[in-house]
Image (cartoon, rainbow over all chains, first blue to last red; front, side, top):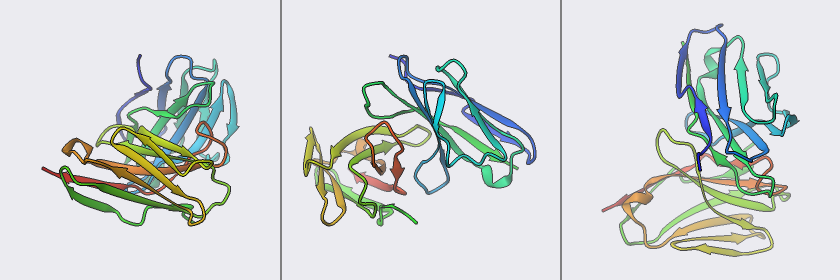
Length: 113
Length: 113
């Protein structure tokens, strides 16, 4: 069974540019999460989806961050415009309808210059 | 305010000995606790979990102990192996494994051959 897929794995952009990350969860997993991990810290939840619905986006900085999961499968996280402080690893995770553990993808490492 | 604290940033043990990784939490609403293991350039991988109705859960070489009164949990690895060298994150949830996880900063475990 394939795991959570994320792309790109690495991204380098200049500040004020837009950037987008893509995530394809494990097949059959209806819950999808985006986490942000800063250097030396643990992951922090940005947004959680149940199918197409964002059920927890309280930690998402909505002035510059947006996310979508239009068909309840894969998801895109966007930052526009990016700031220097956005340099971090962006992790996607998914879990199944039975309420099991979250499975993480490898993450996208973003560097903003 | 860190609700999940892993106060020791690193731990070094000899192969074959016991590794004990500690975690403290402050939120009394947490009722489900997990340990994740992370290798460089990979996403966190689920290791073991424990519900607040239990005080111990064992899976092979890994055992997690929960002391609710002290708001403390620990992960024991016996015997430790060089392949266990990784960053270990403690995480907690107030509503089960498939909701928001609050992570600690992680502990880097090094197992010396």
